[in-house]
Image 1 (tube, rainbow, N blue to C red):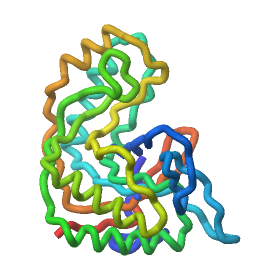
Image 2 (spheres, one colour):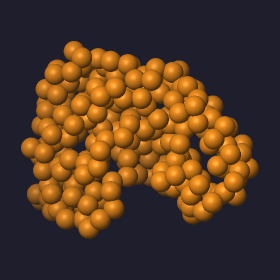
Image 3 (tube, rainbow, N blue to C red):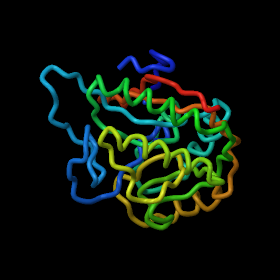
Length: 237
């Protein structure tokens, strides 16, 4: 579930919505909640400092969400033998960087830095479509819808990650791959029905996403699912 913004332009105290998983590897501290291995950690913090789990992402228009929901439904009807944890459509977003736990006073500084990055980029459109799986369709772990990046989306992500280094967050160690997670396979194994279902919609078109703002989100973990609250929004020029 996504809550409405509590502040626009300045943070009050933030993957498709999905938070991209980081590369596996040994986790070593790099700053306020990030690790070079990619796993979020609970950092040492000043006494009494509130911690916020945050990420930076691009929002999606309703028509793109509806198209992706139809794609997800087709996969759900495939009667495969694998168990999939499906992403809630309301939570879909295109993650530029997952930050992890951040001290509340740092959130406002991050928000200001995102405003500077946004002012350096013009708005643009990204075609959304094409379905695939990581690491491959035969033994999938992550089911995704792709985004055709002409270079502008990747450049925006790199600039965001560069700006976040000032706060101790290491940039991604792998090349930015624009995608929206439809679901995660709980126990990956070959499944012919799922492979056929993926192949039948591999070239689907889900519309055009207008990239005209960067959003800072808070992610709250709950037994019923994550709740994302938009903390600040920064318009591209």
